Length: 309
Image (cartoon, rainbow, N blue to C red; front, side, top):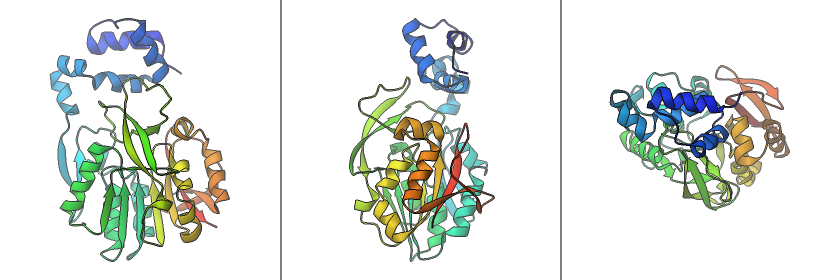
């Protein structure tokens, strides 16, 4: 169910102790947010809420800590990132996906982390490939890239892990990164279209865009982890030659609403496009391949694995 005017009004009354200014504030929020959770997150990360609720607002201030995710393996996370950072801290973020990486990536391999965030997967992959392998990371959101680069230094992976502060896409050039400057989820930045209106509570920034086929990757590429908030089809189009020649295993996020927003395709269309590149799609089980699928039905996010036929 979409948001109603009453949702907005009562959220303002309860969380900000006032009425919304006008319909000019209410209507964009009704159009821009899918549910009350999105609305609540928008309000509690606002400057006004933080000013009126200082005891709660300090939980939203950027606070970087070093977390040992495995013996001797460190990650830099932001405690204000409630959606991802805190779940990493508690050891419960994407455990099946991490287990699949451990079982799949081998010493000496060259791998790619597209949408590397703060480096949870990149650090695990760096351990797996060892000093003779490499991990190339692409992360366009500066706050996350800073944490990722610090993690590389903390683990002394310089030379083994390469970080590019860039998005991946079908072509090289520049892209418009859309993000919420005040958010509880630092993984929500996505590639937008320059002719589209910016969503309420969001800003845009121009970032470098790289097509993997034009980037000097060491070859062959054996594994790609990709989580780029709906731009997965575009990024893999830009890697068509790598996919055709190297046939890497691909661990990909599928987020139906983001696929539609960013790439204009459904999960079924994305999977069909990958089939055209010679790949079959599997659900991810408990760290292993699950059943082959031609579509994904979910209201949230699901991980799939593409394997060359």
